[in-house]
Image 1: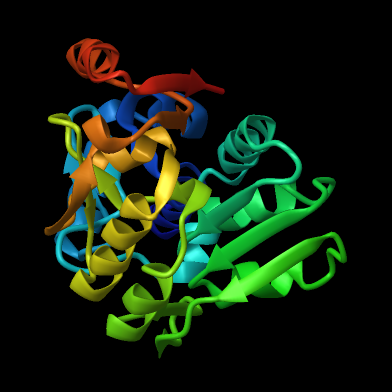
Image 2: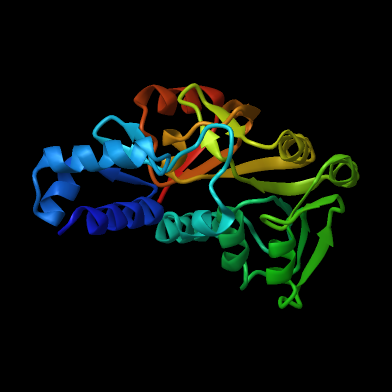
Length: 252
């Protein structure tokens, strides 16, 4: 396989899995580990990937990945997370669903629920729920972020402040190993913080690739979360911290 085709395959793997590992890639493609390392160096120099120990991940830092690419990342894991969250939410409940591809997956998983009241600042969530006659939908108005259908800003935060819901289902762009939940847009973060205050119980939904990413704005701490649904927690110390904080872990 020539260099161009290897780079295409590596980018595809990174987009589907959130990360690539050097040795498994070398075995799969049938080349030397040094060849894959050189490929990763070139892709990282071009800004396509970021190096991590033993491999590389999609880039992050001060700007987020495109929404379409995020939808494709770890799609199967997000579906499993969503199904577990649906088990935590009973019929006849009120809840908030915020911006994010995993919260959209949760929205799909709630299709069989009855008598829900859903408040959201995510137009994609509202459109998904529009077909469920047994679900009342309230859209929190705000400034439209066209890139992902999110409604953010002061108007969205003020609208949310009028509610007290049973559950808030929130996402995060990155999670620090200290337990901090991080995002890129201060306007979205302000809304997420209001959502946490407006909920009796908060459910964080995030796959394990969020631990490999960075973002500059703090939303909250896992200490403020009641349930964390993910596929893997890469730090034993953080698992112990969650136990101390009373944050229930649900691994799918």
